[in-house]
Image (cartoon, rainbow, N blue to C red; front, side, top):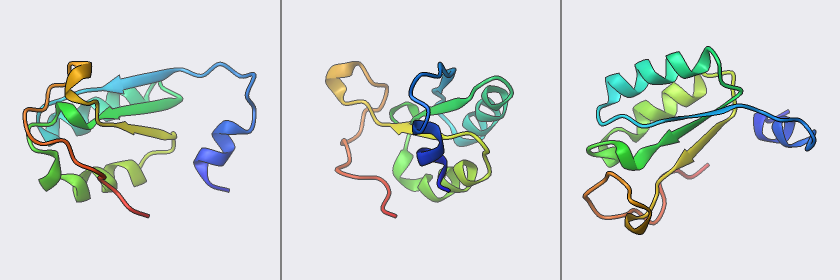
Length: 94
């Protein structure tokens, strides 16, 4: 069963989601490891990365190594994101 399906099956359960927002990949990996100790869901803020387009494969590998469900967000500029580059149309395809 896919992790997303398992997570959404019980809608009455409260879960702890920890957002992770770092500028460089190695710091992101460390923050994800720390968050995984307490989080039931991890939010990875891609807009915080200095250059997310060149690190997507490495981020995907990090996500696959986790047991928790992951929410990946790329907040647009009007939501006060940290990324100064162009906002991508999409980041991952499955």
